[in-house]
Image (cartoon, rainbow, N blue to C red):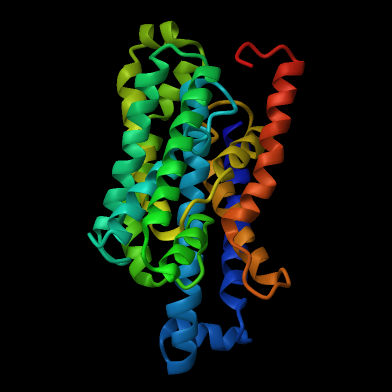
Length: 333
């Protein structure tokens, strides 16, 4: 089984490398393979500007953010033992966006300030704390979803209020498009802002792999095996908040990657919560990189926002999963 997972992960790595390479080639300016290579090496001024300053940051953000979102979805589903668990369902991205928008458009920080991801992280963490406060420790997935919807709705209403109070119409347009999620016009500065938080979040989630595996046997069984359920819960909350805040700060809200990736991973590698963490990460990175490629290929007067595309794919899947669980007599739904 370990050999199968290893081979599968190697295949996913190859697919990710291919998608990342395609991402570097796509853009308004057609570049040959040699020109892309020269641009990466910095040997030509024009191609260096195109590849290093425009396409490379976009690809790195798609890989890192997509990878985190995929692993975060697998971790949350393992923690809560429910395949419908995902950060977007619980209001974390909306709350992170609210924190970022407040500091950005009320003049506390600029778009490239470190305060932006910190504010988004604070918003995501606050939403997670409120979620557990409202739903309670032993709440069912229904309670968590309802509490998450309430938190997300409140954050959305607060965002609408900030937009209404903004005196600059251009700022309003920027907020709306930013909240739809996009990797357009990002720079290496954005990568530097988000990557440390994303790497730390992924490391924290991987460290809890054994806890997620034990929790598959139930909370009492996990406790009897020496797992600190409270520690696993809070470290997961903090890790997801770190990653969601950092990703929302630089790319806006990108939903449902964390719902799709773990389900694909389970269909390929089985249901072991620990074993699918890394495959979910790789699948999430592939999904978001391919989505970013797709928004550049779809004919339109302006580039389609990547958050809109992932939501169009993810929302029907979420509805299908809810109906499937209900038809099979799911205990939580």
